[in-house]
Amino acid sequence: MAILKTQLAAKRYDVRGEVPSDWLTRFEQRLDACRFTEPLSPLYKEPRIGWASLENWLDTDFSDRNAWVSEPIVYFTLRVDEKKLPPTFRKHLAKRQKAWCQENNRESCPASIRTELKELLEAEMLAKVQPRTTAVEIAWNVPEGWLLFGHVSDTPNDRFRKLFRLTFQELGLEAVPASLLEGQSIERLDQLLGHGPIVLEVA
Amino acid sequence: MTTTPLYEEVPVIPHFGSDLLVWLWWRAECSGNLHLRVGEEDREVLVWVDNRLRLLSANEDWKATLAGEQAPTTPEAYHALAKGKRVVEIRVCLQTGDRQYDVTLLADPDGPLRAKLPALVRGGGLNEQALERMYLAGELWEILLGIVRVYIDERLSPEWPSYLSAMRLWVREGMADARVASDDE
Image (cartoon, rainbow over the protein chains, first blue to last red):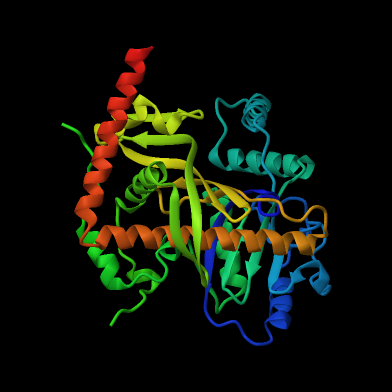
């Protein structure tokens, strides 16, 4: 847990937009609408993404507010389940293609057969492969309008921003750089821009 | 009249991050105390450079990571600055009252927030922990904003040339001290 530990590693975002007065009810509905759901079939290739409880990422029930609200903070996780084909996939595929060629007395597989064999093998392997689950913490100070996302890499941050936009449609997220210059006037920033870098070179 | 810019209006200031870091390093080495506005109150924040620095040349063909207790006062550190290298990462300790934050600051404005926060509450439930962590993360952010404000104030003040001279002197003296120390050895 990158936020609740003393060792903090997170991206900070400012949340822009007006939070409605009944925000708790709205947030509950929105989080519930975009909660993590188990797939209907185990044969999925695209990552499954949704919100879950921070304490237990198997819990996606947001009706119990004690599990995600400690006013003025709300906290939850971004859960991502991803299936990856094993590295031996290509080797197995080549073997099947070779077997097909032998059976059919052909030098090489036609494109349609190659696709068919690939899809078949993918389905077989995806059925057996267990998903890799990651759960990234989010802690949001609602009245102050900022939050921490407990992962520093680009992909999880991109996924987070995308799902946040989908969930809380009228609220926007702004990453750190502008926020750190918060309170500075345009005039001061322009002046700063006019100054060159600090040069300390000693001849 | 001044206006606070919207996100889209904030200009990209390419040297902002590394300038801020080298200024903070100089301030920490020279005085150590910064008088900051943190949230609604004025506070003294003690700043010192910890055990890690990363420098990069302007064309990015040279880089060095200096680690260890003496990292900010090593001959390599001053020589790198004297040769025009830019600071891209610095680890600092920020102390206010009885709370100490160990923070890794990056020149890259898109960089993450990496810090060791003080542990105030022992045990407690998830709610207490979340409140405490967010309170401390908020305080740290206010301190960083305060540092940025002081830096910009100094950078835009008519006294900036004298600050810059002092920074250059600091580098020269640092190199000279390092030379004396190595001669003594």
